[in-house]
Length: 388
Image 1 (cartoon, helix red, strand yellow):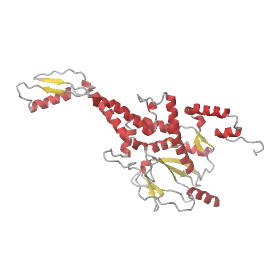
Image 2 (cartoon, helix red, strand yellow; image 1 turned 90 degrees about the vertical axis):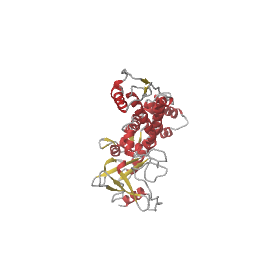
Image 3 (cartoon, one colour; image 1 turned 45 degrees about the horizontal axis):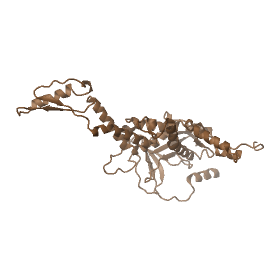
């Protein structure tokens, strides 16, 4: 029992009183940051529909990050721990699901499911928009409320033995104690611009890929069109000459009518440039090099190899370390000697970097064999007589 109490005390951070947190906090479905005057209101479910479900750039960027982290090769010294992390959650990869939640929402919640003996049997990723953190009198989280329906389910922070019931992974938010800020909120304006430009182009295509013209009536005798004539002319134009199916259809005019075409203005022509700029902003928010999304006009990287290496170095590896570190910290009571990290030697995009490092370390004659293995992240060699 003393061993369990010691581990529990280590997990809880000791018996010293923690500094109280500010009691005010925002629910998880509220904006990641307060919108300033003149900006669009951010609502997570609407942002998911407009961004991930409707915008190809945002969806592809999220999939590249989530699938890249989810398929990263793991280095783990415990088969049970590795099986738990590599398992599925509701039919999807656990790591991939958590990554998507953290990138989109800014928070990831992993419920630790145990058997009757208290051993971990499954890790389940909860939808972050359905989870609300319940703060205690000191402001620190004491429970989680999960809202799958009208009746919320309360999940205590710890069970009766002091072991955690939930692992909360959050992206950095500088002014919020309990919830993180997702990249989708930062890309919200760029996604709205990109969608508006796409709708503009679609509408332009439906209008025979040219702007609307003007039907000019030349009243030589000074008598204008009557109301019935105007309504009939308007309905005939709408039914017989509008839409992409009527593109190029000749128009027969009489009675002083003539058609005046209107060319695209410079502001209209800027929509293509505006759409490309918005797409690059979306890629920037999710940490994906624009070249990997097929965006034209971006020459930041000379080739796909450099862009892929930058993706791993700047986005995938830091995010994978964050997620795996949080999972390992939450599972320490059951796996105190466990190790969970990305196996750098098995990442194809970093093979050239690893090969260069191995060559540099191998050529360093002033280093001993043990120092070289340590620099390369290898386990120390067993000395004869140490093995049982």
